[in-house]
Image 1: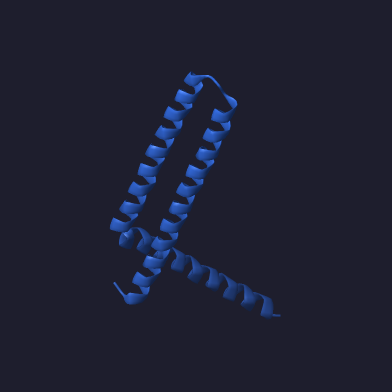
Image 2: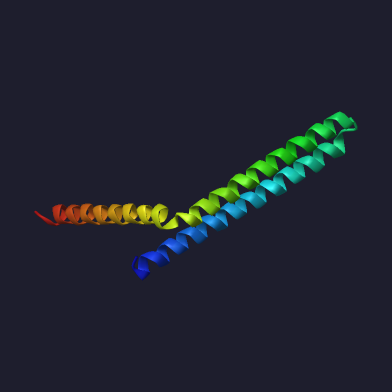
Length: 109
């Protein structure tokens, strides 16, 4: 694969990995806040236990799924991002052609 294409693929993968980490961090912060807010306002141990189990389950499964997604993207990034880049390039080329045609139509008397 050419160097320019590989560099674009690496940039897209890095951006997606960064966004996945940010989403995961926001999930942990949000659920941590909800857990603290709800446990502070309840005295029932059954509610606290249920909330603890629920929050733990959501965090474990969502963290695992996001990490698995990033791992899969890393393993197959040439195919995944290469296809995206080809489609983006084709779309830009078509858009440029349409603009050129519209400019020609507007210039003609």
